[in-house]
Image 1 (cartoon, rainbow, N blue to C red):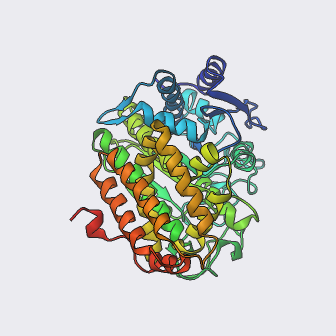
Image 2: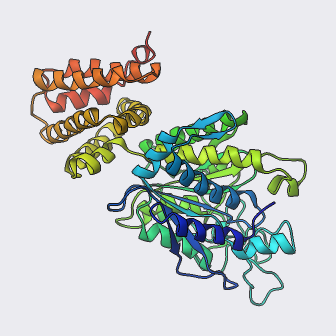
Image 3: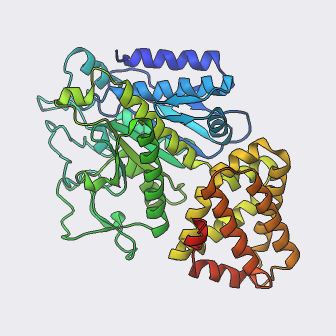
Length: 489
């Protein structure tokens, strides 16, 4: 029923051999503790430079057998759909062939189905509930490191479900990234452009995001994990400590987690819960928190939004919860959730910049406006959220329509050029052209939510006529979209 690590690896090799234009097998630099070769897969449609990326990993904990199978089956489904144009039906949720094509044409997907092949084989042959790697811990009768406590984010701080005891299921290892299996994950983050990360676990029907070691707050930037001692084998030791996160990032985590939850619920009605990792229990050294923390602790590191999905419900016994007799429904839930994460990583403006304009200059200017202005106020963040809701349906339309794609590129160019001059005035011709393109887009949209969102943007553009760029930005930052208008009332 469940594939061995060798079978997963063989299937990946075959996919790369038969579909080289879509799938590449990546040799990871380190074998497992017991000498097994570990591979990842890269999926992408078309050529060109490295694009926005998503890294999917599973099998970090050995006994969670469903998730490596789900990830390799996801690769198969994406390749088949891309080649045939067929929709992917997961219970009550249909992912159209066009949706899946846009994902592979827009992003680079990196898939490491089984982080911990030694542990997986031990579960399938010896101990069905083994959790850790198969590391021999010298000087003790106990084996194994918890690979999801071994990353360099407060490593060795025994907050909650984290232990320095080699015999514990949550043993941190001898040092941060002491294990070849976790170093392989770090290697993928180091050597590829990754914007979103998910580590798929079992069980509890949760979608988790940082932080795992402390509650999140958005007001005091001095409270950073980088100021806390590590390797202490003690808890944090600061009563009431709360970890800072930029408000824009918290909004992003909450929004994407909810969309993952919605995509899962559409399959067969399962109600996953989106929440910070600490809401399950406190942890340190986890891979998803590490993925996100890198841009804080490492100068020049890219910001990566890291998630953990806990697949499946309590099924009456621990064994049945980790590896149910019929895992197919749970795998379909999880696959739909992962597809939602992939889809939410697409950035329409970046795609237009790279495929139509052939330049990132205008895109970089708009990104600065988003991050340095809009993201700093509640009203501005509402505009960011509105755009993120609109961009995917619009992108699907733009992929089909060359004329509209060119018109959208013209808007991106004009906007990217204009926002660099804060004192420049938005004239009638500029505003009328932008509103005209939005109305043309509106005629090709079925969704009422998208149409009313476009109307909200058009109305605010009309209000900007005759104002300077600076005045318009301050207006957007002070007041988000009209909610009643957005709902069409």
